[in-house]
Structures are given as structure tokens and as C-alpha cells.
Image: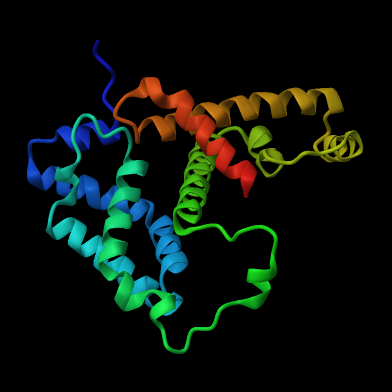
Length: 221
């Protein structure tokens, strides 16, 4: 069965090393905040930026993307594995446990809920970046539709009937019309989010599973 090409599948299959290097660098830098978040959670905060830059530099110079193949499900999982391996190499030198000045946070230890680990923090930041990218692309597509553009701040709002009525009056709309427009806007946003996720998968048939995982990550935050 032939699957449509995605940004990730094209990168993995690229025969031109220069082309694949440029594609990897652009992709990795797009999700740089998730890389920084992982290192901040695993290592001392003051070294997170340096480790991030070192990680990106090594990944480009050593062509780490060539370690992926057609069976590598997604850029997200591949990037997480690279971070775990890189982190393991630098754990003893830079982890907070090996800092002589480090002291445990007693308040965190007394908390009933365990603190999220580096992988969980990475997953959350990665999901937030995907949502932001989808929102920005949707915003760009609405530049010629000011009526819909004005509704973007309400995209994730869980407004009550009174709030909707107030906003509807400000926009000279009926509450019912506003509700219908918000529904259409959310449908467009979901389609854009699916597109963003799909571009990072090797097999688009896994899109629904990936989307549900992303939504679960955001709900747990």
C-alpha cells in the first residue's frame, strides 16, 4: 500500500545528504523548546541551553537523522530517543544529583503527586508546540476573513452562555450565530492540527492514535 509522503518520511528517505541535513536542521530547530524543556528537567537549569546547542550541533554534524529508517514511526519518538541517549552520556557530569550545591526540594518531596519526569515534560512541550503551530497557520489562513479571525481568542475558551452572549453583542452577532462560527473554526483548527501531526509521521494511518496521545498529554497538564 502506498502512503502519501510526509515531511518526516521524505527526510528519512532523502538520498541527498545536503537536502536531508537542511530538512533535519529546520525540523529540530522548530521543536527546540521541547529539547530545552527536556534538558531543564534532567540537568541543572544553567547548563540546559548549552546542552541544547551541543545536541543540535552534534545531530547536524553527525547526521543523526540517518539512524532513522522507514520503520521509525514519528519524528517525536525518534527525537525523544536521541535525547535520552544524549542525556545518558552527560548524566554524571551535569545532572542535579551530581551538583555539590544541589539540595532536594522538600516541598516537592512532601507532595502527594510525583513530579513529571523529563520525558513527560518533553511530551507536553512538544504537544504545546504542535498546537501553537496549528494555531499560527490557522491565523495566517484567516487574514482575509476578519470575522473569523476575531474569534481566534475564543478557540480554546469554555465560555458559558452569558459570556457568549456578551461576545456576540460586541461582534454584532446572535449567540447562536457565534456558536456556529466557533464550531466551524474549531473544525478548521482540528484539521490543521491533524495536518501538523501527520507531517511528523512515517505512516499517516497512525494519525488518529498520535492525535489521541497528544490530547491526553495536554489534558494531564
